[in-house]
Image 1: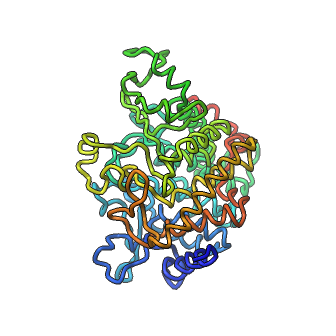
Image 2: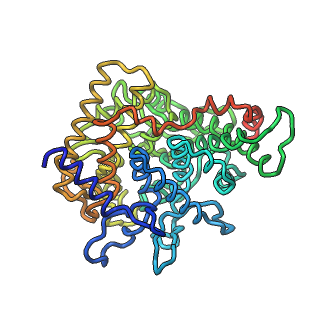
Image 3: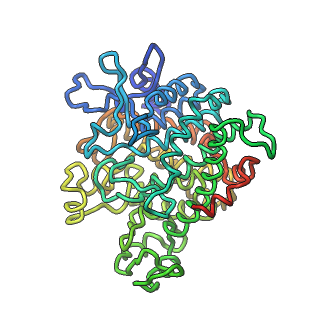
Length: 496
């Protein structure tokens, strides 16, 4: 088929077979187009909050604000009010026997709820308001209460002083055991974006209230809003500083880290996590090169996870966790390691895989996560749109040399051509296996929603309107901190 025919096919699948209705209104998209028999569909016929992020971004680009609002409101109605999970959003939901049924992890393997679903809802809410201009919805008591409940989950005392969010294994896109428990990068990048979005939405609401410079808040709810906004800004500053110190690596940092002393104790030490030189893999020499840099997968005492996780790094660039110079280092690293990350189906979800003994011990012999399969270094075409947004957005906002821009442009266009050539023939498979991503995943669902929509987004950002990558722009930390309601955030910074 020609390119135009493939685009039309993808759009037809999206609008005619993927979108589903609730109460006679489109509410979201199924995880995959149902088969003739549902005996092997598991929960792919449900509406997953995570999977619907690219769906909602595409609908916003199409001007379909009503559908996005319906999706956000439906999730809002399902926000948990149970004591132990109060404030979380469901992993997925579906209409079963005329009743809306949500999954908060009670049906998941390991009974782990998806932390990223809650974080993504806040980000998606801000993107919707910013794109649609629906400030009435943003300032509604229901939305503002939901934001308060999410922040109550995050901005509270814990047994740790670190600003990162501690989660169990399998609590985000990598939803099976893969030794990512603790403080995985993807959750920290999402946390950063969530806090920016939450404060942005709170400040929109506060701007509608007549609050004098030195007047006390008119009610307890507004007082809580102001406090949470100030405290969240302080948290964002501390989180970014922490991530750049503990997660960002390049060749120079690795060489410094290898020569740091160990077995130290006290406040002034330089090796807080007691990282031994033997834990630093030798493959980093070729992987990083002279210009490359990235955010490592996790930091734990004595066990840093140097694996490269694509989504966490792309989100770190999109949300400006890393500086413009660091973003360029990230793109250089990805271009330099094109053979591993993009191969014959972009993009590998993580690198390298857990192999041999590590696979057995750390995944529990998970047959789906065999080396080079599924989340264990499988290839996911749905990730390409995140890289596309990150790199094109960087090009518009920051200075980029012509040579670097040309390199990334070739990489993007070659990757797009790969999707054009392979995805329709291989039925829009969920993921691809093997060191080169040649084989369709052994348990991959066909006609996968975020494969189809991810392709449409890549096409839009590359071929239709590259400037639309600004749809992912969140409030800047500087703009939030300079808001008149944020004047006490420095005092709160000392508290955390």
